[in-house]
Structures are given as structure tokens and as C-alpha cells.
Image (cartoon, rainbow, N blue to C red; front, top):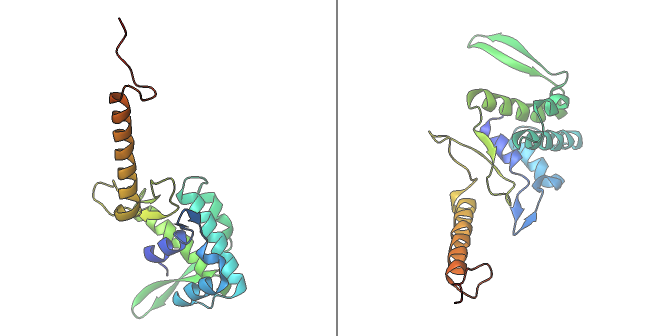
Length: 181
């Protein structure tokens, strides 16, 4: 079963690079490699299901759609118990081409259950990445403090500085000048 790391890889496969949105899974070879890395074949039908699941999961994680958006991905899927010498194992009954897509949805569901509200989009509006907040205070806002966090903090600092400079410069637009006698 896929876990949190694979879920984040899928969600974060549409980054903004140098200001331009990219879809890393648009390339069949890249997506096939991801699927093979996670124990599958990455055939055409499987790649389509993975793209559909990713789009639905991104919309749900951003709060643009409710969990019902994932219904197509898990339709007619069953988990059945299998008793083994080691104990009980739950086996997923699903067509091979849908297995990884379903496992992504199940990874999201486990995370939503065990860590509610911890999966979220980066607070940088120019970023399309997601994060899972593992902080005790549940206060992480950025996918990366080095990139998005520092950029936003620097941007806010420069904006405050610009406003302060404008307020103290008499010729600046919007600056108040002393009244003439």
C-alpha cells in the first residue's frame, strides 16, 4: 500500500518552476517510471487513472471539492480480509490498472483520519505544492521554509519597508506633507 510519501509525490507532481506551471506526469515515461517504482507497470490505462486520481486529490486537498470527487477512483473497489499465519491482512480487490490510483486515495484517507487537517497546500499563492504538517502546533504554512517561506517573509518585509519609506518621503505618492501656512 502506498503511504504519505507517495501521496505527496503525486500531489506535488505539478510544480511551478521559474514561474511556469509544469506537469511532471504529463510525460508518459516519467509517470511510467513512478508507477514501476511503486510496484506496477505504468501502462496507458494505469497512467490515465493515476492522472485522474491526482487531479481529484489535489482539488480535495485544496478545498476546491469535497471528498465525493474521489468517488470515481474508488467505485467498485473492495477490501477483503485474508487470514494468514501471521494474522489478518486486508487485500484490495481492484483491476490492476486502477490499483495505484486507489492506493493513492486510500493513502489520503488514512492521512485524513490519522492526521486531520495536516495535509494542506503551501500558503504561497504562487506555489502549487502541498505539505503534511508534522509540527506539534500544526502551524506549518509552506512546502519549504527555504524557498516559499523565505520568499514570502522577504516579500512582506520589503513591502513594509517600501511603505515606511513612502510615508517618510514628502514627495512620495500618498505621503502626507506638512500643511502650508
